Length: 233
Image 1 (cartoon, rainbow, N blue to C red):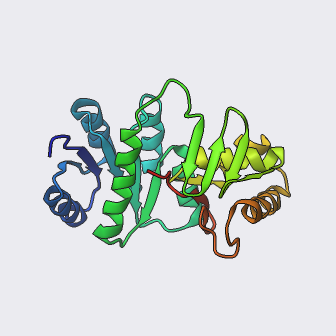
Image 2: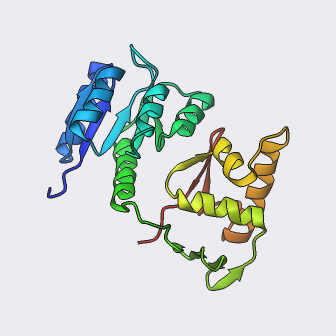
Image 3: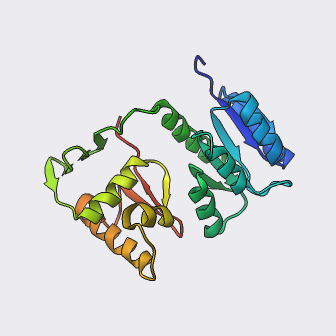
């Protein structure tokens, strides 16, 4: 493999670590492992991995604090792999800067698929300015001209719907939490915040989805947020 990716696993359960290491090595990844938070941060600094798989329940520090520390200096993809299944834990990790979240127990098929999404994120690099035309199957978003086209037909959105669509599309393949939406789209939070998101999202789906009752472009991560389809190749 000419461009072999290096994955750092920060996990205190040796059996889970060994399971992931064995599977990932058969997929031609270089795999490093750390059994606690401090060791993981040191490995991140010294080994320059491409992707981090992070458990939240570590013996010496909380995984969310690790995410925050790493995000101060790096945009490296972080995939949380944790037994914490409550929405508040998922939201906390994603709001802190994690790219995605997998709940234990997990299948290696699912984990590998999520890692491939992280690889595509890496392959996009860091352009000096955001891409101006985004393609998602039959949906085209021209951000320079603020034009949305679905199956060759222009769609008219309200300013809030456009801001919400652009936020989701610019984070395609990643979970965008309710808190992130409120911060980026509304700029504030009040007692009607959750309802505002649902109403705006429902209206947006009616306009861009071929069948809004079976969404193709925007899927719901229950209790956490939303995920936009990945771009067309």
